[in-house]
Length: 113
Image (tube, rainbow, N blue to C red; front, side, top):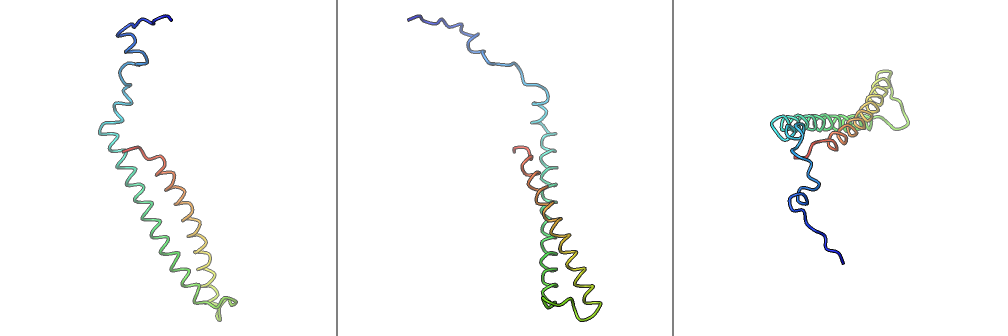
């Protein structure tokens, strides 16, 4: 059995790549903190928008419940109101879906704290 000789410092430094690159150093400084704060504000804004749209969605669903299920409404104005509420509800649902996807992407890409 052959014994392997130790090269001391050379063995200790094996795999060491030298000082960190400047980009890594800056990332941990004040600029990195600003990036984190900006991302947190963006996420908070998306959460707020989502909350507002969810409230609007519930309001529109309540509005549509006032109309009989098999009727468009008794008057032209009621039919128009129902049609507009249905269209707005569809738009709100689409926007909520898009916001959720954006929020998920923002949370996924947020830098570690």
